[in-house]
Image (cartoon, rainbow, N blue to C red; front, side, top):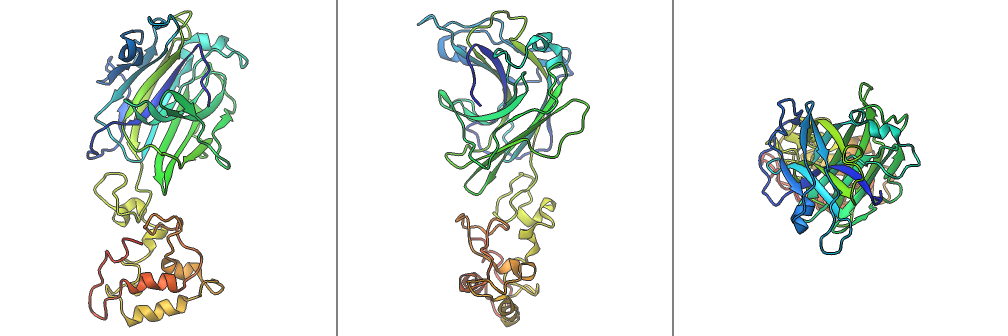
Length: 377
């Protein structure tokens, strides 16, 4: 996703601030129906740099109107300055984040006059995991010409972090800029990186199940953070009443359910960790006993469990390995994160490497096994 010049754009950011992680609640919502911007803080990039002002967030018809009232010219060189204005809430810090916003394209008739070949327009979206002070984050959003794309914001530049088989840009099916569109984006940690994905659909239609774009950042992945609405203007706008504003509504974000169920972390911040969280019920990681070596579920690890382990032994070739019966014993740390989290881990066998993990939990008959004996893989 490359940002062209002389275009006013808006990006919705789910970012990180330099704060400790507080207790996380359920849904976080901004519907703006009280006639205000509901306490969101204003950030003006041009004012931050050289004292210019031009970003004016408003509440219009129960929506958040993000607007640049004039183009900013750098007083030092007389050239247009890339301006960013935003609304953000520094109090909401999320782990794995699920967020969405309603883009009211139809409120601004200017967009209906633009065709697919017109380079002037607006890109709206979510920026996930933005660091407001360092201007780092993942930008995800649709253009008025019908393209949904993402890019990585790095200091003073943009970077494509998508690699095959990732899909970082698509044409939006049945795009109609005279209608309102939902945009939904998620960002969550995986072993060694961050997955960012998004989809968009017309207001009134069913939300699609598939993610239209999805990329994994494995190089300098950005950590979790707060949520906000941010608009970017590249160069001056020629008419502050046309392309320089767009209305947004029903902006909300929430922590995602517990997704990695064997990492000893309360991913969604609800006070329930891993298999104690109902969101993990039925996952492969939580189908094993705690510890995994207690194969008969009687709280100890003894000769009975060893006998059951022998039935699963296949050797490194894995020719006789039964994944349905023996998956909990295939303990190889395939992604080298020192945690066992199927289906990420395992190499399709039960061999002596796996037995070493079993032996570390041995307690003897009638002696409760240490449930932490398998916490580090």
